[in-house]
Figure: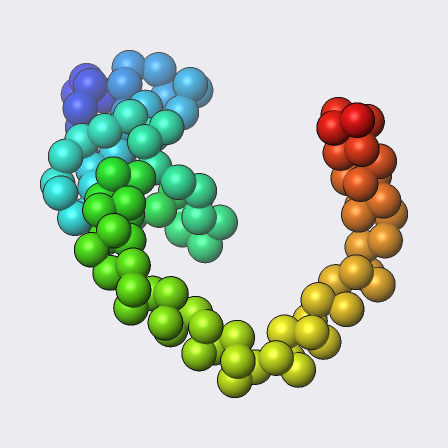
Length: 110
C-alpha cells in the first residue's frame, strides 16, 4: 500500500518518505489539510502541534479578543501571589539559563 495521503489515526498525513516526518495535517476547525508550518507548537500533543491552524486560532482570537483579555486580567488579579511565587521559583531555578539569555539579548540589541 502506498504511503501517499494515507490517513493515520490522528488525522496526520505523510508523504512517501516517512523518515522525513510529517508534511501536512488537517485542522480540526476548518478541516483544511495544511503544511505543518501553519500550525503552532504544543508539547502536550502526540505530534507536537496544535490541533487548529494558525489562521483559525487568529480568527478565534479576533472574534473573542475582549472576552480573552477580560478573563486574563481577572485571573492575574485573583492570583497575583501565586503568579509572583511561580516567577520567583523559575528565576531561582534557572539563573544560568536566564543569564545566558540576557547576555545574548544585550549583545544583539546594543
